[in-house]
Amino acid sequence: MTNAETIWAALTKVGVSKVAYNPCNKLNAVMEKVPDNIDVMNITKESAGLGLCFGRSLAGKRSAMFIQNTGLGNLVTELYTLQKLYQVALPIFVSWRGYYNEPIEAQILFGQKVEALLQAIDVEYTICKSADDLEDLDQSLESCFAEDKVKVYLLSPEVWETNSADYHVFGSPNFNTVNNVTEGYSGQPTLTRKGAINEIMEHVGDEDIVLSQIGFPSKEVYNSKDRAENFYMLGALGAATEVGIGLAMEVPGRHVYVIDGDGSFFFNPNQLCDLAVFKPENLTVICLDNGSWGSTGNQPTLSSSGMNLSAIAASLGIDSKGMTDSTEALARLIDEKPQFLHYLIQAGNDKKGVEIPLKALEIKERFMNAVSR
Image (cartoon, rainbow, N blue to C red; front, side):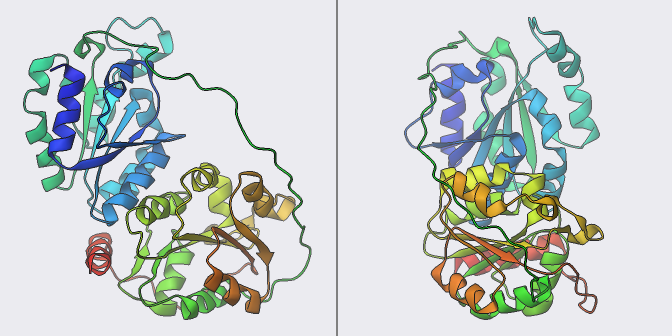
């Protein structure tokens, strides 16, 4: 058995059914051997993979990630406010660039600091240089899941017998014609976010799942209608829709609503790309657009200077029923369950509601119990 096959055998043994993958030519040897029983989620950046894997974890599924070590610098915030905050396991296999026979100066500079970085952020890691280092990998992975922790496996190029750089089918530009005429908006919305959330929660079914973005969206959902089927994001701006995608794909019998905001999509537009690619039929993303960074003082976002998120969504092929500021239309669209619902609201936050009293672990455990019923 090759070292690559050993890794996949261990992942299969512990019940990992999907992996998130961001390309690195040093990982080609292992990605060449992906078994039929494990699906690969191709990600556009590392933090997006954390969100997708976290969503799957909320449905009780096990995931892993394969990335390059420079990508560790792109996911620290999400790692702390998703997997570590909510105590969710995730093994991350990392091609350790800059460590062994590395010709690229920039890779060497970062590669020399990888161990210090992992130590600083309190992430356990193990170095894999040979078959001996992979001998008990299944036990290590099982421990990772049993203890609900993140663990990094630093894969030195030494671990590969050969590096098959060109095993895969090359990409080639291939996309559909886009005819996109999207209406503009210059009216005056009638509802604040709190009013819109009240309307949403009135029309959500008892078995439906609601996942809300960090900050005031989660606080206002809690104060509007707290329920076990709500998952409150306490961190990771720009990750709620990623989490919703990962979750929805694993609970096909339940409809998932993500309550998100314009600032979130400008902060991380990759979410819209992933929504267009994965397209779970049981997912509706509700973008409450007030043209403001609502949780930081209502400073203007790009929506206030002409950027139209409905147009961006339509250009990506996302099924959207258009934008509206009508309360009646909002209620109807919630029932129609489009992929992307763009609802325009007034800036302003609810100042009367209490802070969410639940700790992250309580939110996770209550939610997972409700979803598993």
